Length: 144
Image (cartoon, rainbow, N blue to C red):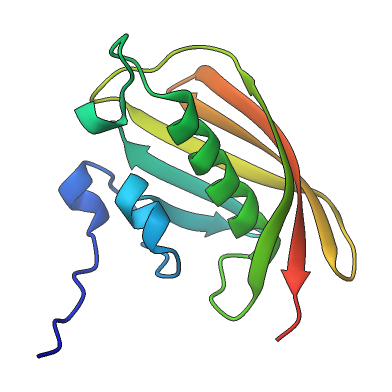
């Protein structure tokens, strides 16, 4: 018997607006779920912190932050399209501030340079106006 996969609804997680779910990576759904919308070629990403995202100190686990930054970078590289597969080459992260259970984390990805097969990007994760992580990375475009 085939079970239809349930697509997460952003409003169910307190994320309102034009956010959508990118269906392409089960690990991101298991960690998140994460949501996005595009502003021209820049992704705006979002997820709501839940207790299972937190470390022993009760703050957002660094590994979750890094996975979300990677998600943001990859959406910038593939322009939010399921038509373009990508893989992370590098992802450098700087932890700036903690975030707590219940807070809404938003990310913004910006392309620095787009080549034929490599895209250089940076992203910033924030809770409101408080920056919690900055990252830079290189993402490879996979030929179909």
